[in-house]
Length: 219
Image (cartoon, rainbow, N blue to C red; front, top):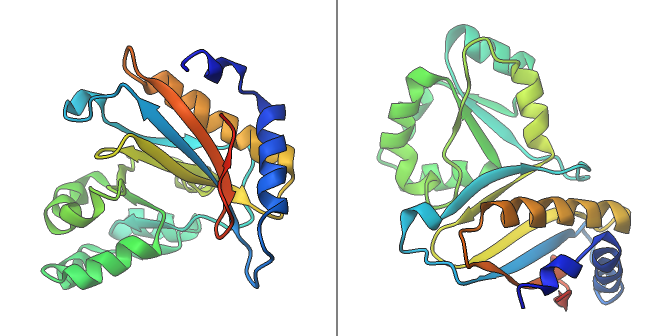
């Protein structure tokens, strides 16, 4: 089975994506196109085998990813000017402390989080139990970083968190996108995952689907 992954290319994926779109019923909302990978031979009981990464896709989705920034003062001002969807202050963090409902709501509202270094420890204490399992712990915003460039990069990225189950499921775009562009996004994810897999583990199965449509097996 591990040899089959080498035969997966953009054309094979584009054909499967086209079929997934054709077999999906029309909905009154714009559906995502999803890529699912099943990984074999990976021991997730060993922490070093778990995969958490952000993968930048070559083609931006029609649905913008939402980015929130934990910051105060000048960093907060820079984040707001850079187009962050929300700037969350230390006071805001204190306000949701102890309210798992509010923290879950926040975690669901945003795709990615950034944080200035001084707030990382507090975010971990207050929100880590919710953000961690979802693979949404903030990335550190380095001093003097180009905040706008980082946010724009995240808007065309996907987050992968292989922690409990040997599966990857990510949205690679939307159904209004060109099949080839979606296939190139899928290839970017597949290649990134392949590069992170420990020895003797491999991608066993690949599927594509729309949000509400049937799964189409690629391999």
